[in-house]
Length: 509
Ligand code: MN
Image 1: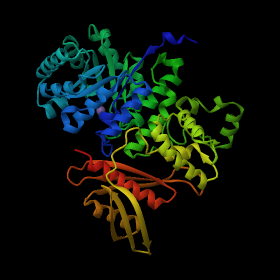
Image 2: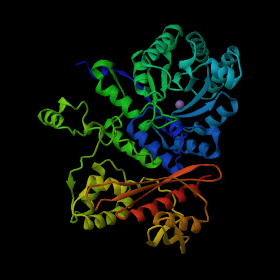
Image 3: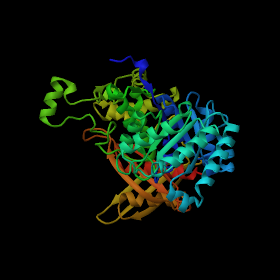
Image 4: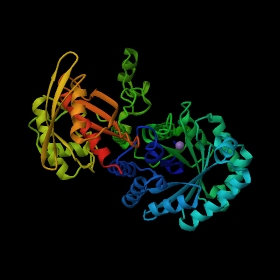
């Protein structure tokens, strides 16, 4: 076995908050972005791409707040190849401990001709001047050659030389449209390394999309050819079919260390919790067969497999659930356990809660322990799934509800608390959930559109907790927010989720 010190370090650049967040239905409230940024720092990523500050006032503010929060990781702001964008990006990240300006320009013939309507010489000049300008502000500048995998190698190398000479410290070669195959990624990175003098002074990065399901394979192939930074997102969220998934890239490198001789600084035992955090915030359930973090990723169902695993885990298990921090669903704590035991368990499970939050959740735990004989780790996860360190301000809270339902009609009387007063409204609908949602819209005076509604059982048994996820869209700008609710009563969970999503949308600028 080779000494770990000789393994080559691969930097993990996380773009969950930029590429992930800008994809359909993945919008996050600013407090949620701060929670994710903090979780990513804790996870050990090298770079957090915090957003695209020129896109909107809200985006600028989020990047600025993330920049002042993050101490260890580099914080990057994405900018188009425009002076105005770069100024805005720099203003957002300049106070970060380690700020990075990330500029991009497409280099493929199809993008140059149809999107940018510029020729190759103009593109080179733009790369040169904007990289130099960014370097006059920041010492850490990344340049991305958008659609690199559909750019002829000669021109790509020319563009890379221009950016490098102008001072870029990271050169990124994205497979923007998810078109490349692993062998091509290797060829591209090898060509660049052989034809761009001085490239070893810069980081060589790849940013792969998953349109053909090859994002992780392409990223690892590029790393084998010498790339030093991989761009990815938690759970692979992102434009269209998404980006390379952080958990797959990191566990690929770790599990196949025998081949890759590479390492990352990710604390893999925290992967599962970050995956759950992001999936909860954006309201996207992971498919059970999702690599590494799916519910069934470590389940052995067939008798032959079970027999093998019992004899020796390595027969069918290449990773241990412990490696990524999957909580064991063993029974623990009963209704007589005290706050101290509760708080210790939360810590052991990886939650970082304030003592006020522990105080606030302890009675809910006791209540659950009274109702259920056995409280599992899964129950605790469910109970705390809506709890992050930064609460989104609750403008409306559910005070009471009363619902009657017949075959094709239902009526709901909903009472909400707001500004210290209780407001009530009765509405009818196609079913109890529909009637309840209508009553909430009427009480808040909003016309939010329901774009997704899911109910899941989040723990086991017939007294399991139900988790409702509601995604609402604002009719004005189409912005979406996801709310969650947990209760042993699915109707109550649904109403709470609807109110949470409403509260978030009302606080979006
Ligand atoms: Mn992308």
